[in-house]
Image 1 (tube, one colour):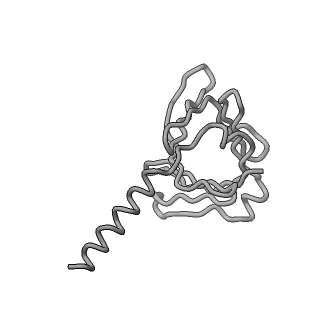
Image 2 (cartoon, rainbow, N blue to C red):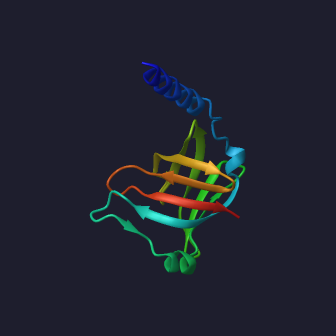
Image 3 (tube, rainbow, N blue to C red):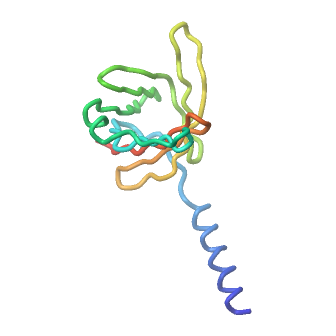
Length: 133
């Protein structure tokens, strides 16, 4: 009986601790974040971008103080738009040529000591690790 109570208390402490994590703010994101790992866990088959390719093509995400978000790969802008933050999600409102937009979330799995891991969902979803420059 005592072991069950200890287990219940431990679970409760973990739930409360995780619920009390401070929400992410835009100010924490501002700056340049370089990709260090890119995974496609839901692809068939799952894949990981090779380290040499990331070093060669130097992808990064740039969060600007006007809430603009830019995504760069091989020195070329491949996505841009505005971002907002809610809890542990970055909501990206991507702007396409012609003015059409699409909004979708990047779920922040981890943000600690200048390293962030975020995920997108769906079959073509990615898990990305970036380091703040």
